[in-house]
Length: 303
Image 1: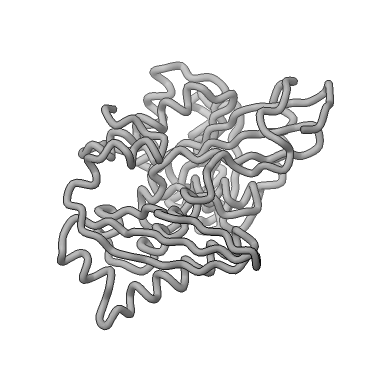
Image 2: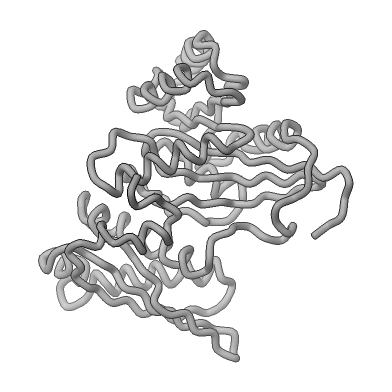
């Protein structure tokens, strides 16, 4: 770790409603994919920390699950994790889908809670500005500013890196002096196994029906490195019913092959080495009530 008396360090939590663009933002700020991304809501389940070190500054970004009205145990654990991480952050980035040209109704409850708790150091990021008439953005920004709870309001299109350089510099300028928490070459505190599982789970969102990804998960069972630099990974996709297993496998096994090939390419790109991925599908009716999964994701089982 670089020794520098002028080191600066800060924790930045990324908050927002499901599908607002939280994971896309963190991935693009870091220049590497750590969090699963899909057009479907509630893709992120775990607390994911991404580390960005530039010059004397180090920012630990915390990508949180989306904040929504929870119904099931997993939902409650995800929302609880999001609010918990927010409390420990130095700066909170509330990201809102601005494509409607008005305050997103899914973000409104989060704004109300921020107002009620009188939360400090909240920055509002109006995301997806490439999808809205620019003439609607200034009135929207003015409406948000009138709430009196945001230290900064910025316009970005995270998917296209629009506005991210300015955001990054403002954050580096805002963090306080203090020692780094991670070595300068470390990008995350997640294990390789969990990242690989996240990348495979992302493919479930991309390639399966609307509901199936929400009742499934991925576990990395083994990770074996070979002398030639390649790695063999075995993962299990857990579903709740036999009918769901049949969908994941697909006719003549075509769907599971498509998932495997896409996930293998993503994992290999991130790992920087050849990857041999083997996927298995298992029915585990009550996997959402297994505390071990919650522990792996950094969630409270009894939330």
